[in-house]
Amino acid sequence: MIESNRIKKVLISTYLLSILFSQGNYYSDRIMVYIDNKVSDFWIEDDQLKTSIIEMNNILKDQNVRSIDQWLPKARLSDRNGNIYLNRYYIIEFESNKNNIDRIITDLMALDEIMISEKIPIVEPAYIPDDPLWDELYGLSQINAHLAFDLWDIDGGEIPGQMEGGEVVVAIPDIGLKWDHPDLIDNVWQNLGEDADGDGVVLEFINNEWVFDPDDENGVDDDDDGYVDNFVGYDAAMGDNDPIPLRLNHVHGTKVAGNVSAMTNNGIGLASVGYSVKLMGVNANNNIDEPWYLTHTNQAVLAAAQMGADIINCSWVSGYSTANENFYQSIHNGYNSIIMGAAGNGVMNGGVSDTTDFNPRYPAAYDNVVSVTAMGDDDSFNCWSNVHETVDISAPGEFIICAYTYDDTLYALGTGTSYATPLTAGAIALVKSVIPDADNETIISKVINTAEPYPDMDRSCGGQSIEGLVGSGQLNIHRAVLACTNPEILAHDIGFHSDNGFLNPGDTIAINMTISNSLGF
Image 1 (cartoon, rainbow, N blue to C red):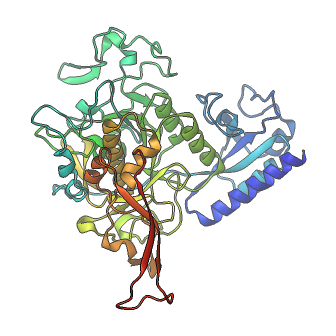
Image 2: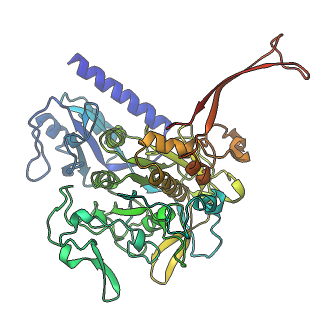
């Protein structure tokens, strides 16, 4: 009992401090609870309004509960962060917004059977949409993608992003993916574990449109990954096998995907740093009338990991929660997936019209998530994207040409860390295709350690310096690919010494440093 109370106090303190120093909006009509591990017989009544914990029911009896549901029904027993198991989290949703939600959280937290009780952060895409425009695609040249591609003998048949005996898959858990977009379709992941007829494809072009192979649609989970007929991904929000956007104005996921791996060197539309790496779609929004929020991000990320995604791109922001922190550490611990996170777009998530926020956004600021902030043209940092000590790298994300969902408007501009993040995800995927047997730490280090310093890294925004808060520099995919076969020499622990302890013109000084190869050599 003493140990349990001590753990709860630590969790409360951590939660309050994280809320204090993070930014984000929280739901006021639902809360998250974690059922203590010592409770072995927890259950929810058929009406989903009461549970086996009498004291919990007493607290909730006058609160107009709409439902009590397991947060992640597909979580496995192995999905955990230490002694925190994802399948023990539950969401309590109320009929309306609650003015006393903090009191309810406190009362529930006081119960021995409840280890965690907290608010649930609202998740917003980390971007600002722009009207459809046609312009130069500056981002790829700014990260030296053209030089990177020259390292392959493309005319001789080599294709960047492809490798023998497998493929690199980047998941886009987001607001749907228009997987039949003409500039994406050839790079869409085809799950051959569900290829029931054995013809080597799960997509076919029938009657002038792309469809799932009818001979593969058997209603069976052929590859035993927990998802039925998941040919190109999954709709984690609606519970079906098609991650296509619910409506055409649900554009964000498709715009993100093109920045990872639009088909390149195909004579139409976009190019991408991922060139030919594969895209897995996972829809994370169940609200057909609301294209600006994501309702099922955790379910979508879990599905992506369970379906085997190598890289999971999270182009959204929210506030802190212990549930989400445990979730992302569980994904890191249990699956061989690299998680990417967008640093956010200003104090109000307002993009270029906003001002840089120095507070953390999540999931980007969680441990073991690669955090990306956004730059503009000409290696500029224009004081609207967010910075923080947890940011790992900068990449172009301002006025980026993206794939679009409308048949009569296939491309549109987008601005946000939503687009800097998939650009970096595509770069990491390209590096993985070069060194597929390397561990994730090594793959990430090739991209982070080869980033290029840029002049604006030490500028000020709103009177506050951003030095040390924008990561290691600007993404340079050419250097990153070179570093896979040629080690970067890294100098650190540099010290200067003179006879009198001062450095003056004309003095002879001694320089001490440690030099090492980059990770992987």
